[in-house]
Image 1 (tube, rainbow, N blue to C red):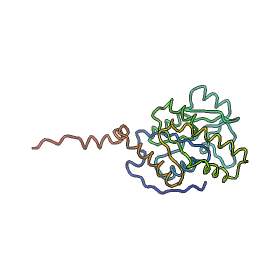
Image 2: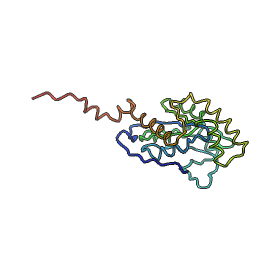
Image 3: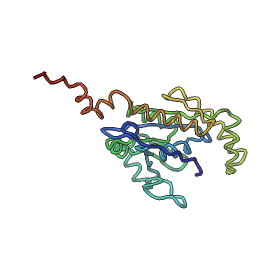
Image 4: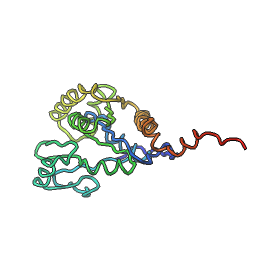
Length: 227
């Protein structure tokens, strides 16, 4: 929705290329710019995908099943939850939302980095089930700027904005549970920082040893004995 798209080129170590991607959790208070940052990251960084959640709420105009959400009925959702099929799930007002563990794992196994956009409670559930998850919290530059962004949407009454601000403070109080903090004051700078986090994770020793096995074997092979 109007977010900048930054061009990027892939190199051997830029793109997630098996044998396993990284799961990222990105959280933020409403108005911090999380969704725009994640969309721009996916558009500009090869090998990164956003997980598609399951929900029981009806599709909104323009939404597509399997692209925006997996739309399911309440019975199906509750059956999946009882069977432990969700990495995290929650009830938001009258609807349920959840992240399929099997779907996420399949994309990770295919070598893609996967991003979950969820709140701190969902992030806590995911880390309990997959401790190797890398978590990022997006902060606004100030409370006045956060309120300005919420009002700029032109969607909410003063009462709703006041509630969103209270919820934001509660959400931000959990920042210390995350691995990285990114302040979204300048969009492009925040996007660069977020991309740096993703690319740095791809250079971790454990991943590189698996990805670069043949190269490392060749580089470290003993010299043939002289004739």
